[in-house]
Length: 226
Ligand code: ACO
Image (tube, rainbow, N blue to C red; front, side):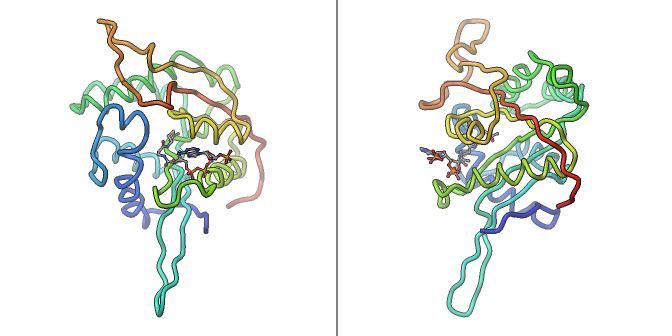
């Protein structure tokens, strides 16, 4: 398995990977019924592409060798973006214009949860390495690829001079993976307690995923480049 930075030439393949894996499988997307496996979602694709433009995203590439041919396939990705003060307030404002009610439900939860805390003030930083999407192809899961992607992302964050990583971990497995890398719990929200004005649960997330966790990790900067 090779771990490398995602460049613009890979964007199409990355989006295709997300359509076949993350868009339908991620716990909140699944609860909201965001899209069927293999199908696209324009809002989430836009969100992913905007994140890719920050040039902090990585992919795990599997090489296959058959008789007379070699091939490459994206086995997993970690999409990371730069988060600056005011970004989440702006994103929440922009979200109001979205006509995709399922996308809105998911991102209102994420953005409002983030707005309850002040990571910039608490950690005295002016930019955060934001781990936004962690996704492994269903055929490659359970082989430690997500763990490796997190390890490489953390190393990249250090090399690019970031002092803080954060992630909104939406399911029990991403929470376990990030905690095993030293991420610490900063805030959490039980899905069963996230209700609308009428007391109805907004996102009926399937067990074993019961809560959203905002996790953080401090990093030491590394001078070398990737
Ligand atoms: N059942 C039981 N344990 C699991 C499972 C599972 N389905 N998935 C991962 N784990 C455990 C592993 O056992 C392992 O624990 P261990 O080190 O104690 O043995 C640990 O989690 C790490 O497993 P990896 O093999 O590194 O994880 P994998 O490569 O399979 O990827 C991932 C995990 C990314 C969650 C994958 O299942 C996936 O793509 N899911 C759909 C998308 C998603 O939910 N992404 C995370 C959302 S949060 C975010 O993106 C910031």
